Amino acid sequence: MADEVPPPAHQVPAVSISSDGTSSSTVQKARFSDRVRIRSILGRPDGGAGLAGQKVRISGWVKTGREQGKGAFAFLEVNDGSCPANLQVMVDASVSDLTKLVATGTCVTVDGCLKIPPEGKGTKQKVELSVVEVIDVGTVDTATYPIPKTKLTLERLREFPHLRSRTNSKVRFELSGVFMGLGFSY
Image (tube, rainbow, N blue to C red; front, top):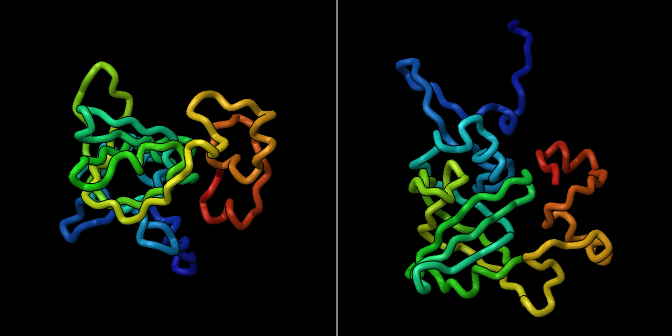
């Protein structure tokens, strides 16, 4: 037992033990940056609900975006490639220009607070990110971006192999061991 080597820090579960022996959930940051992978939020048994109240920074691509409330706020579905699931992100119009954020393919880095969404008949997610600050936006020209919001055929996807990771395609591609070792599967 004394000769056991502990696992690398990026493989340790994101739970901290306080001095009184109780555990509290915390989010685990990515190995080389201060951002949090979406997999570490949504991949939990509770779907991330236990992380409500945590402040996180995420980066990823907007899969879908829609403005709501006559332009008062927007909902974005963001994916960083660490898992097939998307994190719902809510951005208020006072935080950023929503028209730059809602286009499919836009690259974003945002800081925010995880919260449990209000219950409703259309609520599927267990947690969402309420954005406090938009750090970076990589806009996309929607007229020339090859991945539409609608279903993408595999024939069309073959024309843009570098964009395969940004789709929900069921086709599996062999990835190098380096990326798999870093926790990326898509």
